[in-house]
Structures are given as structure tokens and as C-alpha cells.
Length: 158
Image 1 (cartoon, rainbow, N blue to C red):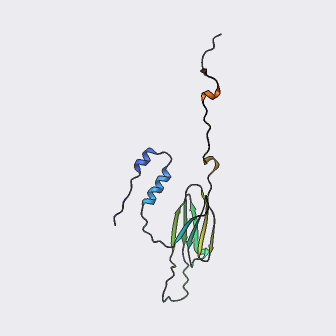
Image 2: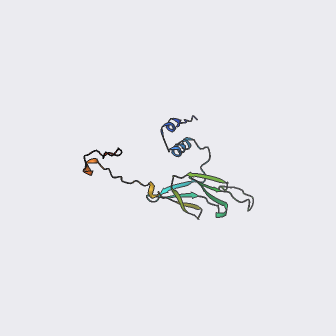
């Protein structure tokens, strides 16, 4: 199978402050070779609210960990080494897993719940007031009502 990689270096030369976005694009362009277990859904539940639902049947709370590092959410699980007997057929996956989710800026984890083999993680985007769009008033010299040129510096003549 042939893969295509994109070179984002020209964008680094002409952009300021977009380093994280370009890093995210670069990371997204890499193909993950890992498996797709456990399955998960990402749902937008409101304008700034999200939910991750992950099927983790057979895992208990003490067998799972959830860590947030900057803009990365890492959910992992590892079964304890207790076998109830000799398996004749093992159809339920009990293997360890690690699932990573890249979070946008200002996305906070509100809570997590494990119920009936389904782990739900609630997230909310909370943009600070100083980063929200604001309207800037545009003034003109005509609105001031003074058509004379003002002198800022100069010598006084007595």
C-alpha cells in the first residue's frame, strides 16, 4: 500500500502562532497502524459540549486509567491477571488498550462515568472572554469635528 505524506514546512515559514495547528495536521496525516479496539463514538451534544462513548465491556473502574496531558486525553485499560478457569473459547476481548484523543484548546473534561460496560467522557469547550470575538469601533477624523492639523511637538514662540 502506498502512502502519501504532506510537507507542511512552507506553512511554517508564513504563519505566526499556528504551530500547534500545523503539528495537529501533521499528526493527523500519519496513518495509525494500531487496531480499532475498543470501539468508540464522539458525539456533539451541544454548541460547546461533546461526549466520548467507549465500549469497554469486562473492564472495571480500577482496571482503567484516564489521563489528560495538555491537549491530549489518554484512556487505557489493563486486565488483572486473574483467570477463572481454562477457556475453551474466548470471544470477549480482554486485552490491554490505550486510546488517545487530541483535544482542541480550551476543551475541559467535565466528568467520566462507567456504566454497563460503556465509558462516557463529557467534555466542554470554555473559551475565555478575552479570546471571544469582540466588535471594535471605527472612528474617523470627520466625526471629531476638527479639520485643523494638530501639532504634537514644537517650540513655543512668545
